[in-house]
Image (cartoon, rainbow, N blue to C red):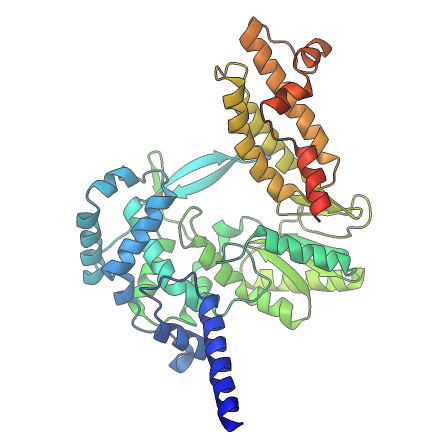
Length: 442
């Protein structure tokens, strides 16, 4: 009997250890060995981590970081060094990086600023670090991310390992179903550009005491930005486009997460986009007061026009989160997300495109399937409207190819010439049909 209990105890301990290690299956194995993970789980002496820099610049770490940067591709930085060019002499460049990091002579280059179009119009600034800086940042992130991850709370989903938008939306759906329909929809004004550096570094220093690692993080926060011939040093913020920015942003918001958990609120956060689900108007307003106090104390600001409290069961009081709009008991695709999709469809179905219809449909399908898989829980009215829009675009394109004329795809003549069955035979993905099948499987 005692032997059986002893064996059961050993097996239970082994299972706990296995489950614990499974939790960290995403970490870089050459860095985070089992003894390191055990220390992470059990807590290190004094609660702070020392002597990390030698692991950051270990050749195995830099090689793993380079492989990740190479997979992600991306544009060159201010030095003109592309990923492809770096690959030609990767061993030499990685050794150079290692020597500079070891000697303490490594200095990040300025970040190249570019502007990308926003779904709702206008442009969003994006920083592109040099390839070598992306490698070092990735190596640094590989080292420090598990330390911070071990502290982060459950309801944070953005830019975290083994988590994503669908997980966050699942919790929102569960809360609404449980009657938490009074929602605080909070939006921080220019969050990534306004995080104060000193308080952010203070958060880092709560867990890390390696001076060289701290210097490296600070150097990235103070990295010069170049836009054309202009060059300046930022006084606040984490550069958007930098590898470690999302991690640092999550760290800065961690104390807000803790405060909301301690106050008993249901909060769902994806980076700086978050909602608080409440049972009543009073509870929601109390939550907003708590958020406002935290924001003021942390040197940030809530967007006055984009932060609101409402009962999402009521028409006009809904909220938007991760591409969806929740209103009147239904889930819609928000207007910006629909516009973004239609813009992509327009670009792929320009009337000047000379490819065969089969090639165009194959190109479209890859995008449409991915979009549908994310938005398949939206209201059913969404999908037949999109199907009609796509077929109109394809009819116009095909008519231009055949006749050189720019007729509209909604004309009766073109609909008769190219009925829905024509596109079905060519394999066009149909959202209405996909939604019907998805509903049946649910």
